[in-house]
Length: 447
Image (cartoon, rainbow, N blue to C red; front, side, top):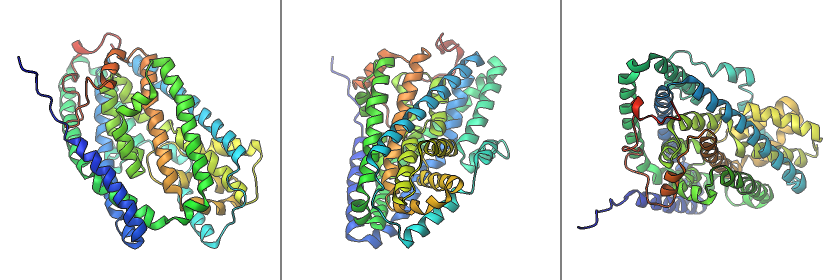
């Protein structure tokens, strides 16, 4: 008998094209800065297309995950465990950032300019538009459907949770609705797969614009803060997350990151972790984490598990304080950073959100330091990439860890997937053979 033909994955050419496009964008930004800046709408448009798909994907995933679970206690247990884990990891990230930031003192010797002061004032104005109370009230949408039109992740999460629990309470009568949502999910992922073919264009425009606008000077003068931040992110990922993943799930962090390499590349080219959120949901299910755990952990983690943002806010705050000649005491550092960490919830994946949070935090606690934010406005995009990559890595690890803790992680299947014997379907972004909403196929441990 002849060996079965293996379907060729045409998308590997797509991601090679993304790399080439990103390099070409850097070249255009250096050689023709004005042209590079003019190409910014290409990157903006691609990220906007991805964001367009976030709400329907989150809604379908959570509704199917919760609606297929017979006991509401299961969802509450996963959600409570996830929030506890996110709080601990964010605290660890803050602590590491404080230690490295105080040791390196990256802002020493820098001086403010008038242009830096103006840029800082603009960012402070952006950050001052919201506070913690407004954030909490903003989770509630104006109408049941406005969460989808406004593009708010947390509003969509709330509506999806309510719909999932309502379907769960309906029992067998909910099966037709769940089947319909499953078909909608298949349609949404198919649209997303089509959009991904525009990734090279988006990467080209985004990289050309940022290099054209920033140039080499900012990278040279502020190299210390950038290198320190990148090193701290790597320290957190491989010294904290890596051992934790191996200890709990017996999964090698490098194998997991290799499995998610296309998502990392997408984030690197767009500087937004939100662009990879739909694919992370699909890939975590394919890896062997149950749908309820994925549906709860991933969207919630994108708003509450901001490891990279915590490190960024820590080091940027210390940098600004040192550069302006007004260093913070340890107590001031902790109180200010706790405020910033709370204020940043819900902003994950949005390019520039960390900078606005930094400016608003300084404005509310130490107004005299806000001018210093202008020192890092020029390189925030490059730091945003590391921030987004670290946030994404933290959420990927969190999903596997929480799946293991709750007994909802198929380790044998994960080994098959990570070894390449069970490849992810890049055409549909779905596990057709593993998908179902029928109660008789839901694992016993989920029921």
